[in-house]
Length: 455
Image (cartoon, rainbow, N blue to C red):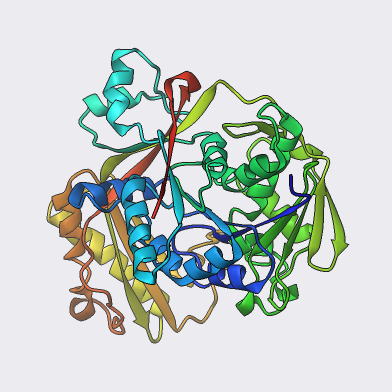
């Protein structure tokens, strides 16, 4: 058993810095690199990609990243754990193996995890009368299907155990689908320190560590309230956890990087998406966030200790999504004297013209960017406004009506008041509205498997 390990997170979401993981593996001591690519809606996007092209359905950026860092992680024996597999871990692994062959690297073991994708099992669960009700609204997923709504994705937030199992089988890279964000960091601690799956306090500590670093630089100065205090934010260092067998760990970052690691930056991330502070529920454990103790050990080094946990529940959380209609939005820049009044007139004209054409919508939106669109009713409107952006949008189940909306914006440039010049981006097209559907399912119905192969 190691006396300590170093775990870093280089991706907080699909679209995060493409250079952060490279800097992490090159910038200092590291045993594990975790990468979080998945948000709730991401799974439905990947499912659509796979339906159109069977060898897609995963985070393609992950493959490009591995090509940049594979020689380094092999040389330094840094293990990579990512949920980049989306709905197609096999294809993701095949793409990474192709990268390894291209680079002439042999002996690479990649593990993939199956079992989280339950889209094809929904009808099976319905026939077994397994409840699948929304945790938000109480409505039934089965009823939504009967009403003609297309279910786009359905994935279970699975336990971290298969990740630890893949490490035990010697995987250098683990590609999973819908794991928890926190589990990516907890699994290495369980594996390296031999923690039992009912040692609730230690599992809670691992969960808290994962929660702190899951959003990348958001705990090292990014998105920090007192942002003026953060040095060299342009060169922000992504977080590194120095973990110990007793569950104590330190949050830090590599030397010669910007950013800030303090009790305050860590605290702000802790309350991010926290929910009930007494019961932060994951598939493996319930962590009590009120028990967490933080201490500034050194500059850019925060000690986290005394984390308490409780037994896990009998359920997994399901993240499903379905098609809930269409939306479109567009904008115009209005400038010159009386810009705000002219923008308001443009908005009124647009809706009157659409009404005349027989178009009504389930939901419409009119915003004036720069004129309290974020703080309406809180801050007074400035007396002198020289330019304003008018943004309008609609939502509706009828795709044709949404498409018709998009054709009514550009005419305002020549048939509206003067100073309407900033039409850009082309005519807005209808986009699918993907609705999130959270539910619970008994753990006994979900079975995960691990497969490790070597190139």
